[in-house]
Image 1 (tube, rainbow, N blue to C red):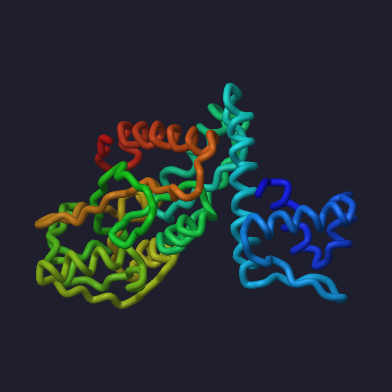
Image 2: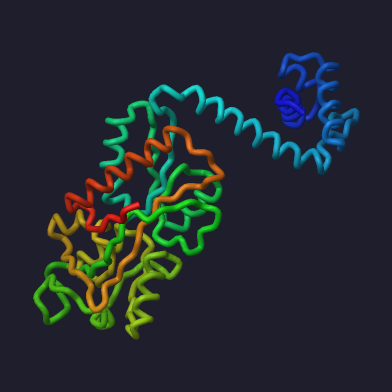
Length: 312
């Protein structure tokens, strides 16, 4: 079995006939048929069923087609990576980011990649963590960030920062007797109408799990799986919410939201940088991962990302 035989086999499977594949490949039909016969002999199975109407794949042929395509993709990726050795990283890199991380990271990361890696094309995709985890598992993105890796299988991850969730209110609708913006005991969260994501959302699952463990029963009056709408509702005084500081820093800086730490106890979560080892990392993806860590360190150091750096 060799790469040429696999290429011929894929072409025949795609075209549905030896003659059509012969024209596509510009290879004589007898030579094409001979190579496929050698491939079948080497594997010890029949891959194609031939008839006057063309060819169809046997059950073994279907499996062989899937594996052949994967082998050729891997070989082509290896060729590309080897050619790039000694040159600057180049190519596309897709990066899945949860909304709250995207708020603080996506713009400075894009600017830094453009400045330091001019041949790399970054595609940052904002989505809920569940979608990002699926994309990573299906090898549809090169890198991703997740908050919860308890259900992750066959993915490689490392914690990069830990951040504490905060209570958010409209500036003119502070609900407690304490000074506006003062730390909010977790027990006091039960006293207000909350706007939170639905229970399928990772943030909501974390909040529910921690508050239940401390006997705090929340009154969630509105469920909203859209970060911008949650912030808008709270800024209009139509409820209160719990978010990571990075998720609403823009509204806080504009004076549209008031932010306060949650205490007794705090609610914290880690942010993980994740990739799928089954998807070979290109030099471009490796370079973007390194730049990401540089940008994260800078954002934390400058207080833009209100989190604690986790040393590798």
